[in-house]
Length: 67
Image (spheres, one colour):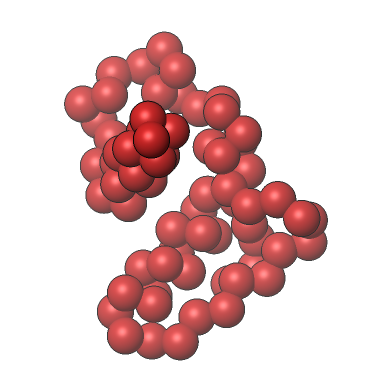
């Protein structure tokens, strides 16, 4: 995959979870784009619409930040 924004990261993770080899190529030193930078539609939107790997990302981030 090329592109380290959240879509590229999620696609790479999904490919690997299905048992395939995956490589993520990013042109910067940061991964996740605006999502990992703290910006997103969830800042003011409905959290009930968040599903899949995005939901897992938020849950893991919250669990990690509480430790």
